[in-house]
Image 1 (cartoon, rainbow, N blue to C red):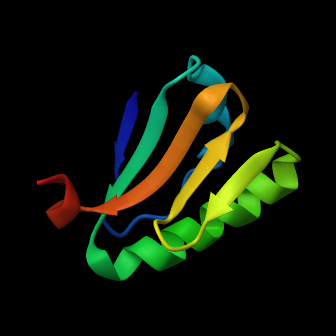
Image 2 (cartoon, rainbow, N blue to C red; image 1 turned 60 degrees about the vertical axis):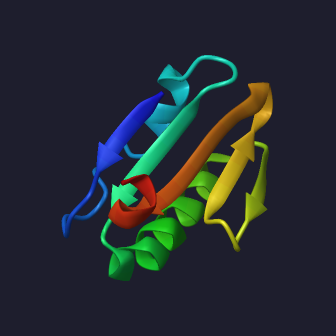
Length: 82
């Protein structure tokens, strides 16, 4: 599992694609951010995932993405984590 804390900074050039490459099967990449940032961060992640041509299933309601090999990416608020 990789946990990435985001406050107000933009995603880096390597996020999330390079992080996803590091994940093993049945693992997760979680971006944790303030409530106001969940949708903008998730939208940017979706844009980058689509450009990468990875196979994925998108869940807009939970702000999550499931990839091959049972890899998961989600964006959560600090309150949801705590």
